[in-house]
Image 1: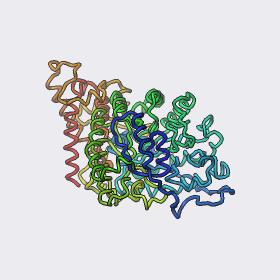
Image 2: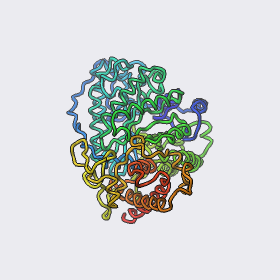
Image 3: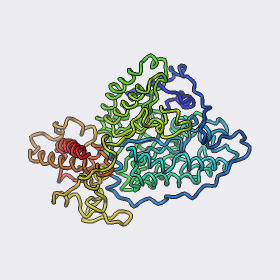
Image 4: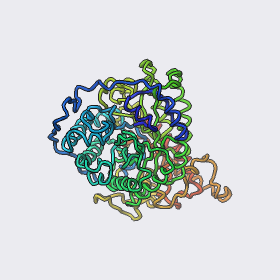
Length: 606
């Protein structure tokens, strides 16, 4: 959940809305000054209203609760299917956060804090409360089993949500990860948390929903805010080498466990860290450690939050060749200055200023940008129609400018009275009723679009170098490599792309690739570029673009979202014998035209 500096702790505790934290390029210090200057205008909002189904509405905290947990099901990941994973990881995302499920925020789930210890403000206070480890575990396990269920995931698929962001803390990985951390001594509270995270991922897979696993709470805290699991306000991660090592150990664990899980779209390294000098070095170190775990890890999507500095991290992502995605968060809450603006002015900001900033950053970094926290919260005096316009304008802006968005958040106590923050309540009110990539569809793939290729059909793995490869499960993979497919004219654009960093074949960075497509690489004189090579690359790009549009549509009517990452990775896989480095822009030009035409063909069938 959004937080910037000490003010954000207050904001979350009060659950107030409407200070514009728009995705513009500002320094962390100037943003902090701006936010703190507005704090006096916050209007306190009561937390006294509770759901009738509150997990732990107790006046007596002297007796530890108990919970007879049912068996934890859905523990086996499906065999790895690299082509299927490609659809999940590269498609445009319509997502929602599953916030305050495995890592609590008091303003969202106050009932579990009633018998917490200490400040009663963060996850750590729950773990130390409730009469001891057994009582705290009972409360949390009941919450994990009831707050969000499989039927919720089924519902999300039915309305076009294709991804969920799952905030967790390092402590959710089990007691061994809490040793030598602030959660040391209460690690046993979380001994059954990881199996439930596995269950969530597998249940999401039943409905073709991707999962972004988000390290919301790092060891020692990356921001000092309660939503990172602490309640003492201290940010200890960046100046404690031991805490950094333990956080990276947790991230490496996640990579090893999830890299071959088809519907895991990525791992987010940190959520809303302080934008300190040590942040980028930490990101570099974490990325290197995670990518070093396997060949597959070199191509796996890694998400980083930008510390509310859009420009700085846009440059960082643009300078990388591997699959790294910038996450920016956008919120509007009450303040004296924003109160002076009408709701219509806020809407115009979203449609123009915010959209312009995001579009500029997205273009620079090849669309490797998402808005993975935003809400419908606006001035309390706004009419339903104005609130709806504000919320849908955000959704349209984020869809057009980036590769996806994730609403904060799916569920909370008192949800039915809070359409600004609770997705379940906002659907059909502030938000549309459905969210499919093709808006006019019902999510069902129409006749005329072939079934999406799988690893057992016409695709090959990124590392395939021979006529036949196998997945880790032993299932037969593609029998056609990129080179042989090219020779026969049957190559698929949705062959799972290899990471340029892994193969070294594609040297073009996102920043250089995004120059005007008609402009040739400054490293290769135009006179040396054969016209037939350019034409062939353009034609090949067009063919692959059409095929990509149709193949993604065949997978739950998805659209390609991370377009430049897909292009660069696919060119790296094809090799210089198919698309020369001097002709990547020609290929991309054709690909984008083919993608548009292919999506138009799909649209006609709806």
